[in-house]
Amino acid sequence: GFNDFLAENGIARPTEEQTYALMAVDARRELVSALRQAGYPAPGVDKLIELSAVRVTPAYIRALAGQGYRPTSLQSLVEFAALNITPDFIGGFVRAGYGKLSPGELIQLKALNITPDYVAGFERIGYRDLPVDALVQMKALGVTPEFALSVRRGGALPSPDRLVQIRAVGRDLSER
Image (cartoon, rainbow, N blue to C red; front, side, top):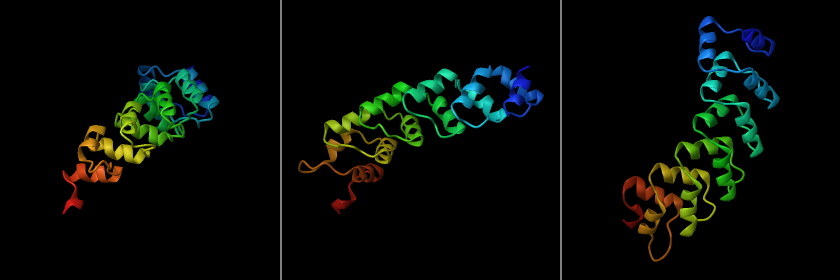
């Protein structure tokens, strides 16, 4: 009956191999219905397998929506779940003043383990409202608030771009 349900909901009938995969990941009717109710397009069988494998559930979709987030595509929804982007994770950034993050920005932040605490560390030493792309570059190169303090001159903090440059080449090229 599950294969008939899929066909009735605009999803192609799975092959025998796909049927086994759907059973292995415990794909549910409720997920198909929740996706439709949330306005997502009907997933293909393989995408339904992916969504189920990373444990996307109706409750997860509702919880994200409750935080004001709806990943823009089924692929983004897979990425959110695979990275464990939770409403609590999103809420931490909202409380830190980053309330309008795009799904792509949230994915970047989570993939690099950038937390509200990481951002707060920079705010404590004088960096305010750092753009997500600056945070991503800094974290990717291991720039920390402690590093920023160690390279400042005469009390002036280097710009985020300068911090990235210094970390990338190991020294401040403007000293030449």
